[in-house]
Length: 273
Image (cartoon, rainbow, N blue to C red; front, top):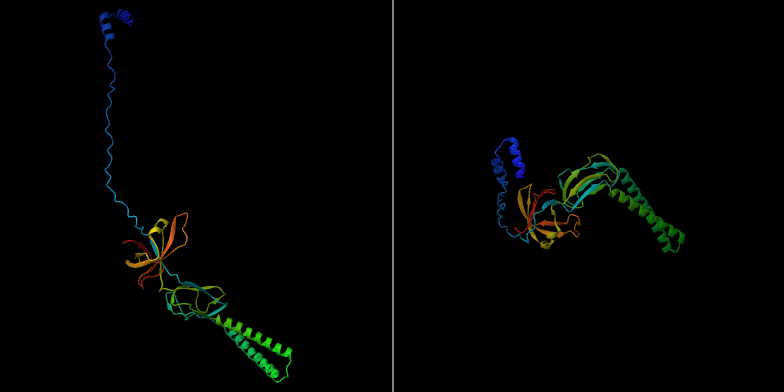
């Protein structure tokens, strides 16, 4: 290397000592100093309290009416009386709807007259038997005719009984779908009724909460529509867990009557408070 530098210096007209001094100068190494990085400071985590193992998460609650029914037309015909409207109250045995049944009532009257006739003929045969002037065939025929007439009478009476639809319980009308004087076919829905004096609370909770719930467990329910809280107790628990969502239906009842509540209202259950 030095020989090559010496020859190059001669060719360039430089002093040989200068070239050798520059060739011998050590090259400063690159700055390889590594800057130490301070470790990232972890945020302080506030201590958390242990969750209450006996607490039940507040599930949504819906007010329902377990006693309800959809009343349909019991026969084909024209409505003659349909006195109730949505929201009206009624008592057990009140007429909810009545059909025009002139023909059916006439059939009943005819069946009743026929039964009286057949019953009289049977009485005559029984009297003749008592006098010893009777025929076995005539007596049997009269008895069969009397039974047939009685069956026709009962059938006609059953048809006329369908002309009136009576309330099966005390309650309230929640919906109507027909009007008075309308012609209906048998089975046509007319109105929906419910018992608003025996409301129920329905909720869906995690199946893991079952260890804390049983019939009689007290809780409170806050209803959104009334913005009021009512005491209640668990009345029953469904007999099946949904295997997909791991939830189960739980039902409750109010401790005291609440006339301001209506089916369909919603709220939140509060356990352990």
